[in-house]
Length: 324
Image: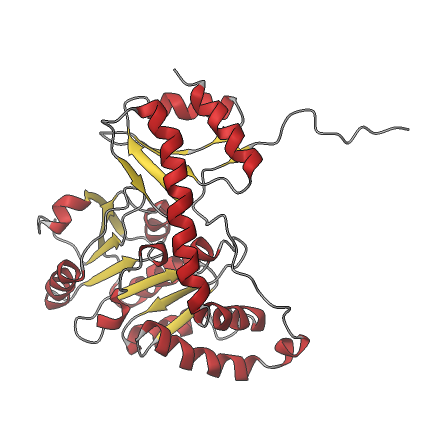
């Protein structure tokens, strides 16, 4: 019997994510890595402290794992807490803190930065903000961290998308004004399957989180990958330049449709903009097999990722040109 395995429809072009289109080149992993977890773990702690300029760094299996662990830890330490999410933000913050029985309140990021914050125990702030790409200065972060710690609360910074900006991480300021910082490997390296992230924080927090996630949560290959990431300084500079170039190209595609008056924000791995047709355009693009992401709000935001290959660039250009 003949079974036709051909795909009758063109595969979807998924630009709804936020991962770099260029991958960190990796040497073949030595087979000995599997047998050396203790050595690799020790090397990780030394290199992580150097890279982040922070005494305590915990590796976790992806940023969502880090969020869940923090939510559970805070429930253990404090019980149900009032958590303010500076919006827009990564949707997993809301889901996972609610799952741990915390009370979550969405609050505009501009009001948070102005100090107009409702009574709370935790503030979660993107740096940069996803998807608007707004960068929060270290001085503002320090003031907010100091205010929250004085009240017995915590500031959590989601720096998953910081690498492409070239900005300094708050991790190196944790000792002066305590806060908790999350970083991620996948977005900047283009290694979407890395499932590796880092939590930087005061020693008591990282020690308690280690007890929460367990000592065997991170595998030997992930320790090895972290070490490759830390030492890729020359590649990192080249990657920033590459991402700037492709984002400029992507902005150019959308500029033809949006005109000169709409602000387009570059996020390294994507561009975003506010437009009244965002939801309508996203639906039409999906009908044409191109997936982008929208953020429903008072002003709807559309986020479009960077294509990986020339054929995808051409396909996206045709789709954008056909929008009303």
